[in-house]
Length: 305
Image 1 (spheres, rainbow, N blue to C red):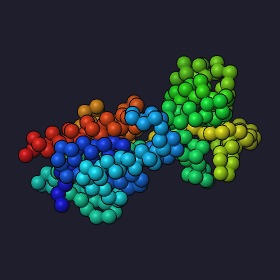
Image 2 (cartoon, helix red, strand yellow; image 1 turned 30 degrees about the vertical axis):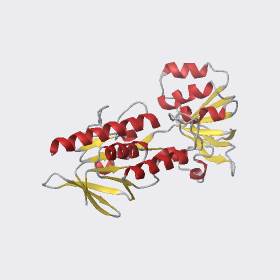
Image 3 (cartoon, helix red, strand yellow; image 1 turned 60 degrees about the vertical axis):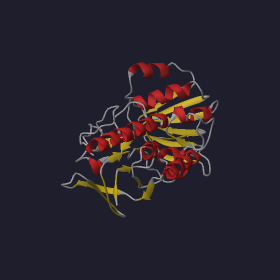
Image 4 (cartoon, rainbow, N blue to C red; image 1 turned 180 degrees about the vertical axis):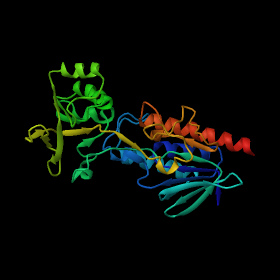
């Protein structure tokens, strides 16, 4: 089958794009290599999605999937390995489950949060480990938390957390914080904030629930256990764009170099969501990208007819 729109990624951006493209009467295929719903599925409780007082990330993902299916989109679980283009201008996506062909592509592959790679870490994600203070900070109000990371993103998250939690400990593996000096000074002035640099996280404490971290200081090899009710990780993001680098211009960090119009460097390929170079990465902005990319793809197809 020749699809009008093929969407790589089944997170909020990709599924929103599917809804908009189907409402424009285009045939749509969504390909997702992991979990439909994307990173939001790791959040046990979400309160910043328009229209919902609160719901779990899984509930929101299910609603997105149901909406896309109701509109008539096709969803397949497979990993896209490469993209090619025929002489007739159509695109072929080679996946680990077969090949698919379409007239346009929306890249909504997202970005993964970097983790520490410590044994048992996966089991705590969404159950004591968080990545977004805006999303999850309120759940730790009046409690003790640890922020792992010392860059701008980590310090921005830490400033927000410092206003909510009883105690915040910042842990950085380098011997210094790398975020802006102004933010560093603001955090150092907070009475409930303690900063440890030059230390490596060795283990998560706790079994069913996180109880803190065990860290080792590089200078003298001493080990310390830091108690906490939750851990926030801000050690970077990994955009999932590598298989598409020949088709979409990437910036120095691997994000698709596309603006708010979601147009890529290749006509017929559009970009939406966290895989795109942007400052704010939230569910609402991902959905907005999905709508913009879908309408741009529909305009491209209509002009080609």
